[in-house]
View 1 (cartoon, rainbow, N blue to C red):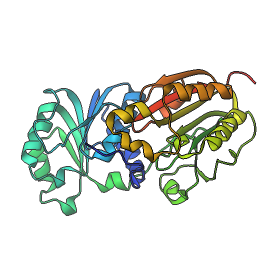
View 2 (view 1 turned 180 degrees about the vertical axis):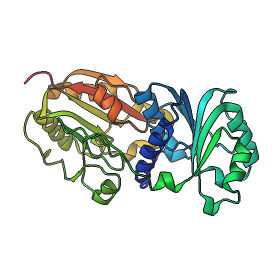
View 3 (view 1 turned 45 degrees about the horizontal axis):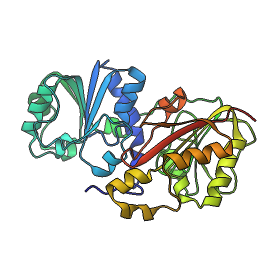
Amino acid sequence: MRQFPRAVGKMYLKNPSHWISFDAIKKYNPTSLLHIGCDQGNVVKRFELEKGIKAKGLESNSPYYLTRVTNNVIYHDVSHTPWPIADQEFDFIYSHSILHNLNNIEDVAKEIKRVSKRGLHSIDFLNSNISGKGWTALLGDNQTIIDHNLINFGSVHLTYNSGPVKFNIGCGNALFHYGWINVDINDLDEMAKKSNITFARHDVRGWIPTHDDGTTAIIASHFLDSLTETEVDNFLEECWRVLTIGGFLRISVPDTQKIQALDANLLGNWQTRYNKESLISLLQKVGFSRVKVYELGESSSEQIRKETYDTYPDISLFVECRKMVL
């Protein structure tokens, strides 16, 4: 059984490479994309949402898979061939800093040719026994080879939203771009600066640091379960205070029903526990309306759907609601 971690190291420090990878791939105008070694699937999700194309990823690292941001990530080791992908299923294939680590590269090269028409691959040439020309000969002329440092140390070009205030509360390693204010009690300033992200260190168990009725969206992912019942009540009242009329609140928490089906012993990891009925009732008690359960990545807010992501889909309950009246 795969374990469900509370946190997955500093994985989001790789975030700049996700954005650089997206920019590098989109220059080829792919009509469909397979990303091998896709981590959480950030690149896959961006192509799904921003380009509207079919996109999938292969990932064998369990913590990354368990925190996947899209269900189009397949849990599979790319060194194990054949892949669960149909012949010529994808127009474009992408990999970043993984091919030079594989022992059975000839078998993997055959799979790349089988499932895709063309592609882009970054290679760490300092740790590769194969030259650039050797990689081209192995993978084919339709597969472009670049130095992995072009991705690792490339420039991130972002479009910032300087409009309404949006909070990502208890953000942990899951920090958002697009002008979201990422808030956590821990010092994540260095991490945020490396990813060019807005961050504020603050303990929201007291209050949310903004004025009344001025926030359009709040996300609190796997945060409520770390609070006491009194702290939860206070936090939700604060969300109501700061949200504008029509503002969105999206909550994700460990789902007791899903967890009990997997391993009931895991329930001791959280201060407060929720199922669908209890969380909906709690939000309605505060005054929120249009309370609805959503699946991974779904939202009635285009802003939330396109600019943020959910994690831990196998154990999570995703609930969204709105402040509609004073």
